[in-house]
Length: 313
Image 1 (cartoon, rainbow, N blue to C red):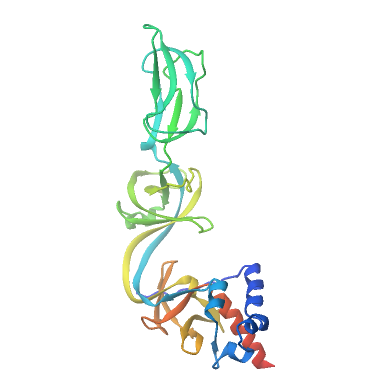
Image 2 (cartoon, one colour):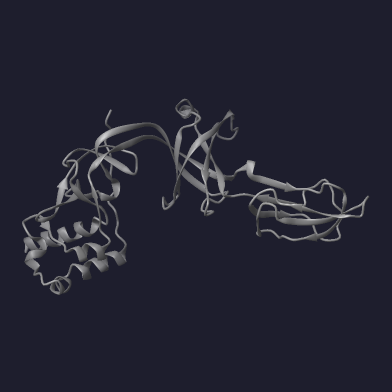
């Protein structure tokens, strides 16, 4: 069943607007040997040189078929992968002779961490790291006697868990193995993973059920403790025409896409269907293999507005 989609109007950065004015001004056109009349070409079209397209950061894409995800939006928090933690303890009671690492230091698998002199044999032995990671706790200093407490703690953050909160009314829609997209709160970072665990009991505070997602974290972007948004994929729907959401602009209260033709770029009104936050289904207004502006289309919208003001004069 198709759902109506609300598209927010993008707000360009101030510097981007200033660059637009300079780029598409008469001065910029004069450098390419083109006059103001050629800028708008045929009525309703905007002409840009290849150089202007490149300098403005406009990105072009081809209209294709694609997959729209039916998603369940939830929130969660990044957590340490508890299966990638080492509590460093002494094999034999003794005196700590050397501690080679401090909190925050990186370590490699097999690297010596602590040297201990055993009480009974008076021989020294080294305790090495069992994984690549970072020292997150240190409870040992030279001269101290070992005990049952961990001397150091090593955590590997190359993968992390994301603990999602699923409200009781949505639990039936969540299953192990489902794909999940993780988004930072400002949506600047994304990651993909799968649900690996669903808690059998609810949380007492809000009755939510925890669903755990495992994601790769090679650059350390996802730090334990950070809150995130997430989209659990309930179904994937193949659609004949999809576009990226960044391409959409609102002109005269209608969603439009800027399409490149022989006369230049045309603001094409489209009818939208389903969306998943990244892609939108186009029910009418676009055909497969047409070329459209997928990024920085606000530049063309601003130029179109300049032309309309000129027509009114």
